[in-house]
Image (cartoon, rainbow, N blue to C red; front, side):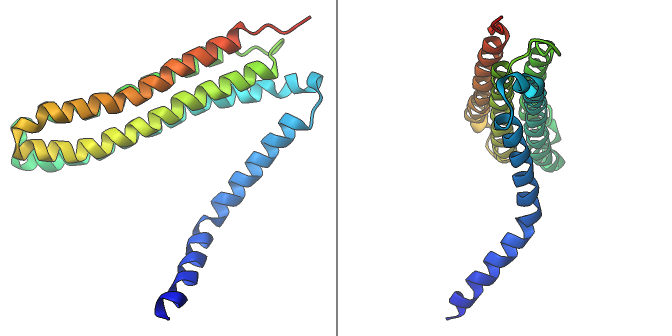
Length: 201
């Protein structure tokens, strides 16, 4: 009976915490949907740059979020481990470097997208292509940053106690970084598809 009374209370508390964020997100998506579907084809090209710039923003912001999380999370583990084993700090800096590279991936896609956005002749197809390109790279970088941060925090602590684990932990970092590389490749392909599209006369 006690469990039956506690569950609704927890649900109401959780819903109340995220209600403002859900409302803001819902309003934003509603505005985007109206802009995308409530205009004719000729008017849609006027809002197309919005999607292109959102793609450039998404690529950089989400990638930097992943890089920041990976750096902070693994940095906490390095600092904690360095108190007892200061000679291993430089050897354990690998996850911080690999997390920092994620921001460069987002920067590359953001520059590619932004240089292909023009005030005239920019279509909705190009906008959608650039938006998907930015999201592919940005969200992949975010996922990779979370993976590098969590494994880096635990890995450097474990390596301080058992040095034989270094090779295995390094492989984990490499395959975590590969997730962002997949997003970068797909993002470049999608951005190239948008750049190759030409508005019919």
